[in-house]
Length: 303
Image (cartoon, rainbow, N blue to C red; front, side, top):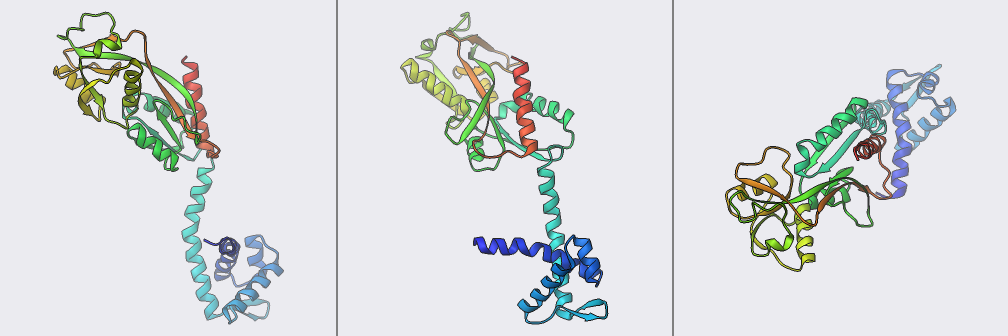
């Protein structure tokens, strides 16, 4: 849209309000009072609109005015246009109201069981009218949606480190080795990464944050793991391990894991850092900013 066209359309909005008011009360002075404009300004606008159309839109009858046929058609169009615009204006007002806005949060699937519900529950206790859009997906997809403005905040691990983002660490989860209970390592008190050199690994697909972390860990240890299966769900990975099809690097299960599993700590200890991210130099609406601050404050209190 050309800049001049945009300016013209902005200037048209109050004229639409004048036309709508004229349709209800054909009295210029009262219309001017209703829309909050000086009466000479309203009269001038009406004359200018008539000049632009090439036909008058009002005719005077004593102290009052009467809309011409062209004026009546224009006033009806203005009324329809404002009826379509007003819900959008209400949405904008709510968006800018920290008590009535909307927060679109993207996060990893595994956080939907307890972490995100607890954050939302605590926030809604203080801001009961704020609405939420909750988007669950792989880390890569969530970060892409944040970059393209489709979500306001992203809760992922690891947090994105590009120059387009700002982020704060919320919490860390310990990484562990998960093996079948009959596995040769099952009786160990702890497992080193190099103990997995000859093991068949069950991992998440590329694009998932945990896959990126484990790939980086194996690269730092100087070997390429033997990958037997790739999955999209952590619980599926646990099930495959329980079936004796390999071992995995995961975090502790939030619910009772399948029978036949052993969870063993890594030595040296390794963790998975979760962070809340947003676009840098991108002003956050008040409700989004309030939720971000609530999330950071909540996890700061829990440290």
